[in-house]
Length: 64
Image 1 (cartoon, rainbow, N blue to C red):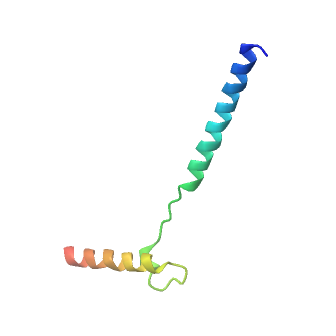
Image 2: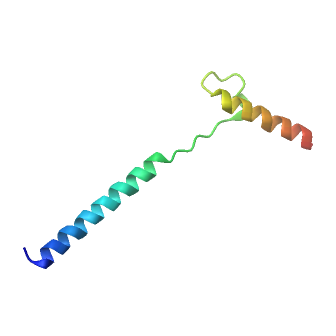
Image 3: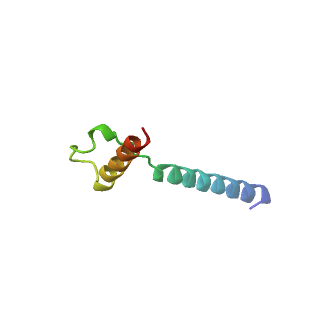
């Protein structure tokens, strides 16, 4: 094989690897937004979210 073909294959391989890595990293980052106004009675909200919403409400009451 000539050096030109090997270099092209390496370049294509690295490009594909970088694209796969970028998609993988982008798909693992997720942000979940919860509405604290319904946190107390919503059955699907995790316990940690309900506790954090309570803390936020206490903080707002104390600051005002």
